[in-house]
Length: 506
Ligand code: GLN
Image 1 (cartoon, rainbow, N blue to C red):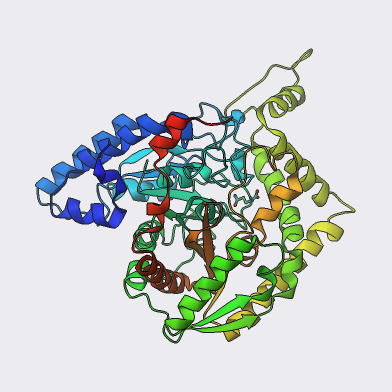
Image 2 (cartoon, rainbow, N blue to C red; image 1 turned 90 degrees about the vertical axis):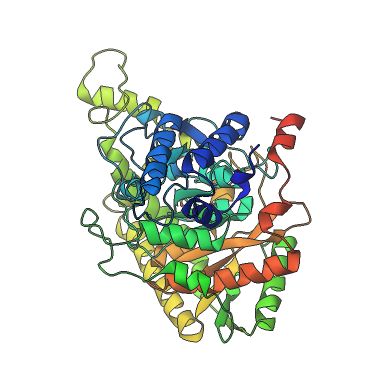
C-alpha cells in the first residue's frame, strides 16, 4: 500500500507542485486502494480508472512543460453518482437510470475537469439521495470503514466512505437535508453544505430543488476550503446560483481563529435525545473554544421542533415533481407491461419496477401533500414553518457569529436497524435539516471518538453567504483537536484492510 493515499489533498498538491511526485503515481495509488477495498466497502458504483490515469498523465505533461496549473491539479477526486458525467454512467443509485450516460457534465464536474483533477469514479448513494444510510441504494449499501457492519451515513455514504477508507483524498457530495454532513459525522470526515446557490446545481439530479446543494467531503478543513473555492461561483445554467463571489475559503481556513468569536449553542439541539458520548464530546469542544478565547452564548430556535415535519412535506412535494420526468420515454429503463402496452401502462410498469420503496413512499407523500384540498393544509403550512425557522436563525445570528450543535444525535448504527422504520431514519437529520430549510451554510468536522469506538462530529452554521466563517472557526477547532490528540482524527480509525480480513457479519 502506498503512503501517498494517507496524505491530505493539500499535501499532495504541494508535492505535485514541487514535482516530488507525479499525478499518475498518486492516481494509481488510489486506484490500487480501490482495487483492494472497494469490493467490500462499496464506495464506488463505477470506477473510471483509464480516464483518471489519462487526465493524470496530461496534467503531469503540462506541469513538466511549465504550464500554470490550478493548485489542486493532479489531485484525484470521487464524484457522487447523482452528478452527471459524460464519460461514466450516472444512476443516482436507482435502477431506473441504470446504464444511463448523460449528454452533458454537471458544472461542478466541468470545473474539476478544467482544473485537472482526475476523476476516480462515481460514488454510491441512497436512491435519488433519499436516505441516511445508503441502504436505499438499488445497488446495495456502502460500509463504514470504522466498522464494516455499520452504515457510512447517507445519502452520500459512498463519498464519505471513499474518503475515510483512503480511496480518494477529496469527494463531492450533495446535501438536501444532511447528506454531506451526516455521512461526515459517522465516518470521521469533514463535510460542508455551502450557502444555497453558492455552488451550481446544474447537472445535479434534483431531489428537492429549493434545498439541494453540492459540497466538499474531505479529511480536513483546509482541503474542503480548496475544493469549495474550485467548485463555487456563478453559473448561468443555474438560475438560483448566486451572482457574487463569497471570497476565498482557503484564506479563511488558513487564518482560522476563535478569539473573540461569539459561538451560539442552539438550545433545541442539545441534551435529551443525544447519545451521552455525543454530548460529552460536544461539551468538551465548547470548553476548548472558550479556552481559546471564544464566547459561548445560548440561543433558542423554538421553531426547530417542526423542522423535520416541514422538511418531509416540502421535500416529497418537490421530489414528486422532479421525479415525474423518469417516465420510460426520456431516460433509462423501459419495462413492457402485461397486456396492452399503452403509454400509461408502460410508464406505470417502468416506475413500479424502477423505483425502490423509499422513492415510492416520498412520491406518494408529495403527490398527496400537493393535491387540491390538502395543498394549503400541508404544503402551505410547511412553507410557513420554513419562514419561522429562517426568523429563528436571524434572531440567533444577531447574538452569535456562528451557531454550533452536534451534527447528529448518535454514532453510526448497524445495517438493518432503521431501514424498516422511516421515522427513526428521518430523525438522524434533526440537526442538519434546519440549515437546508433556511438556505444557510453548515460544516461538520470530526469531534473525537465515542466510548463505542466510533467517530462523532460537531456542526457549525453561519448566516447565508458567510461560508468563510465556517472555515475560520472550523480550522481553528480542528487545530485545537489535533494539538490535544497529537494526531489527526482519521489516525484513530482502524486499518480497513485488517477489518476486511476479519470479515463482515452480514
Ligand atoms: N436523510 C435526508 C433525507 O433522506 C437527507 C437527504 C439528503 O440530504 N439528500 O431526505
